[in-house]
Length: 156
Image 1 (cartoon, helix red, strand yellow):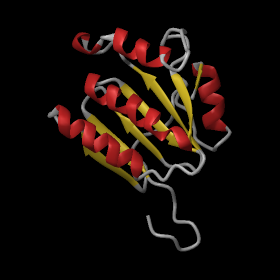
Image 2 (cartoon, helix red, strand yellow):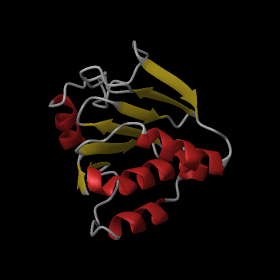
Image 3 (cartoon, helix red, strand yellow):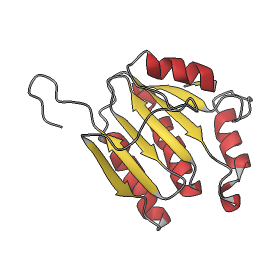
Image 4 (spheres, helix red, strand yellow):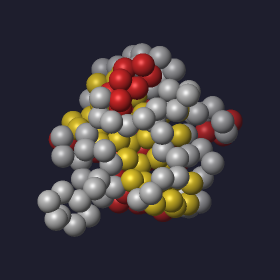
């Protein structure tokens, strides 16, 4: 895992053909072939959903997990636990300075862990694959997913 700045994360997205909004975040608006869903209210269901959804992204090489809007809900501002998670990977930088994580396929559990934390705390979280599939969790309790287009007749 490597943590990167918002600017670096934006460059990562653009290099893979993903547009950014005016605020410099991935464009995940309602577009064709996007599946909208509600984030469950039950914590156990949130964890299970995030694990299943990230598993369905078919991460072939690496992915980007980018966090934003972690201060919207005061009850979801417990940074200590997340900072300790990142410290376990050797990173001391603050979330505000380096909110994005590039994660290799072999470390997909790290991507799941970050997304699980985000859905439990209702932080915005973008999970984006090298092939253009993405998953977005909103602090407002909904999510949006764009699966990778079929490759050479493969199913989703």
